[in-house]
Image (cartoon, rainbow, N blue to C red; front, top):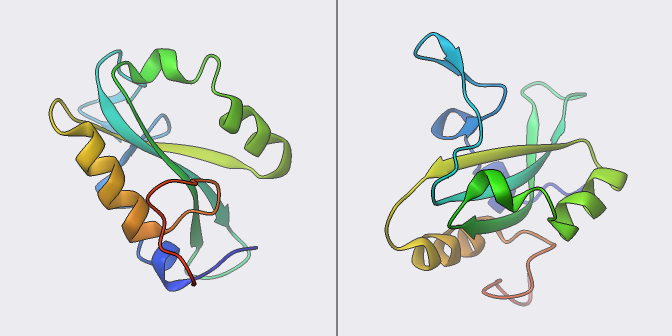
Length: 115
């Protein structure tokens, strides 16, 4: 299981997930734009280790996962959790920033090389 310092930088309290509870309701994937990360969580450690596997963006988050090939593939290998942030502007810039920050193994573009 991957655990480098980039993934160790992931803080789940900064994100929403379908398992989040806020404003008296559970969050759902919004039909609007945003960025997301696909995360594998190692629950055998304390504190938990969050391994960011993939970073993406979409103009419609709820539709994105209906036919997301990488998501389906990762679910066969990992126990994948979707974390998301609704975001209206600068989706590409935010996605690039997150890929650089977390260096996820299943993103091919914008990754740091040689690490």
